[in-house]
Length: 483
Image (cartoon, rainbow, N blue to C red; front, top):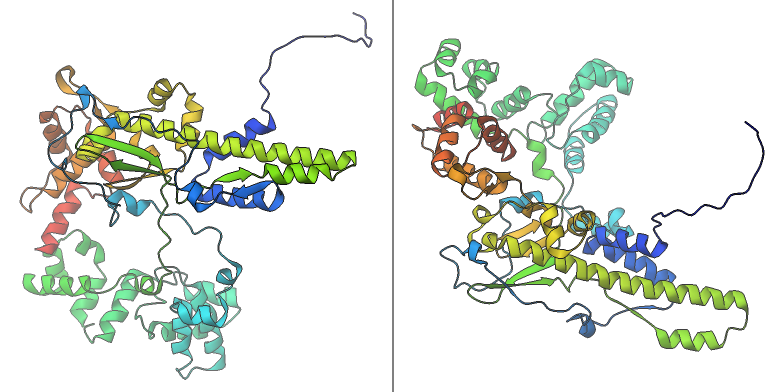
């Protein structure tokens, strides 16, 4: 075997992502709010880009209108709601409560409290509220300084969960001074802030109401028995009768276990939909892009032609040409993004038109591959087109990924059911329970089987937990406490 240098020519095939293709893929993954930030950046860097006028953005000339959606023979619409017109979603439904996003693009003055006017306009934070009350207490300088620091260490619920020894070590202070500072915080309104655990938080509120008698203190020492609704054990330990136990539990339920939330930051802004689904007839729907949040750009060709005539140097002409091409590519990429999102969304609701007519119970099993086959796109493109995108429907605002659900087998070779529809059916079964008839997971399995759904008990438990619903034992105890 000889070693040496030699020159070879080989021919091979490979996939190379051009910068323009990389830009198109990146833009497709962004929602309208994130896209707005990218567009603003490009506008500041490219002199040949212009933002379209409001009159031009009102109806996009580049996105063609497709026929309205209508039900397929296999998707006959349900009864009710067919004569109602479309109106913008009102109060968010249950799914909407999870659809929150942080506010983007906050102005510098908002990030810095907005000066004096901003501080006067917004409500005081929990720390500010407590510091104002601590200033009115007669505390020694050492305790006041420790309390000043501790109010900033409270969690969102208002608790200070570390013990006094750990806090004293962290502050390099005496443990007695830390205990005094904690006690000073717990005397402030809302009562219970600064507590280490639930027991001490509730005890502080009861003491403020002059209701912390020996029986109540004993009850607080056995909160796990309260959670299990073990009335017999509580009667024996607290040495009271059943009516007194129920009265004490009712009084505890009127307390605030999370006092810090009363001064929690304001709710984050609602998500802004990228697509809107409107009803246009008894059985027809229209899918449109939300033009209010969709950025639209134009290429200023007149300015490019004018400035190009004045440039004589080669480097200047190359720079102008590169910026002009980049502007054209961005406009084309935005147009292609709009077309792709609209195409994918229409394909989704062509299959999920039962959701628009009957709600979550009308959802059908759907995976990315189904939409890819309907649109002729790759699954990865469908995935990017639906990532972080939201759609406004008459039933509320939902992420596009909400409409992709796995299939649950049906009995006697019937049509498969979607997982989300089964979740909603489980919710309805549990909401119809009474105190004497609390359904176990096995009973829910049997009830679903009567409705033609084949599902395992562990799957029912998984879906129930995903809905935030307690087990049958816990629900039975909760109903016993409420009675």
